[in-house]
Image 1: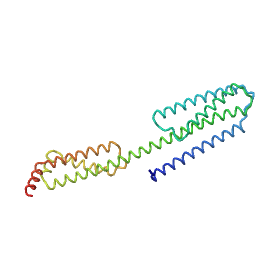
Image 2: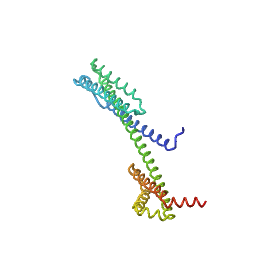
Image 3: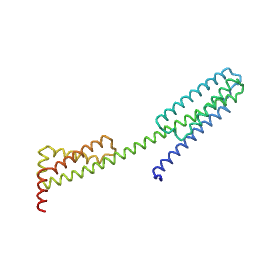
Image 4: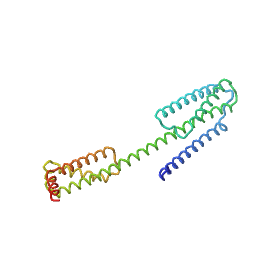
Length: 250
């Protein structure tokens, strides 16, 4: 089945947004890597290096756990996790955890190794943030499309009900013109004022730009009242007798 022009436009706009977001995140990560490599000096014999590695190890393990919990929540609601390959992010987090564990065990004294540890922490962190931003953006667009589709459906139902109500109202007026006793029956049962008020309210909804569920339910209630009133008018004894007389004449 071929995609419509609107669907192709939405898909192209979504892809352009994801590409732009990826390049922005990649540029920020590259700037951080260059800053750690050329602008920041880490003393090789500092006492706090092991504490830093322990903090990075704990933070990596904790963030991976939260990431897995987030994926579990997404899958439990039977939703897609986005176009990002979440397995790659999990493997990157595991690699970073193993690298931090290696530094804790080996106790090396090379600043480039510890800079690599910081970069290996920031890398999966940026990927995780990018994944959740992409997922939330796609979820927001999907909800916006669903709301637009629901709004279009409510609008179609409302206009259809108004059209049906106008048709029924015209049929009632025709019966009132041809059979005066129908109008007398409507006035005697206090249906006449309600008939005109409901018809006017339905016509006023033609100026509404946004329909809600309660508006459609109100229009349907007015329409059912007009439909029942038309049925009652057709069953009036005067109309039934006129039809039987016309049938006998034929």
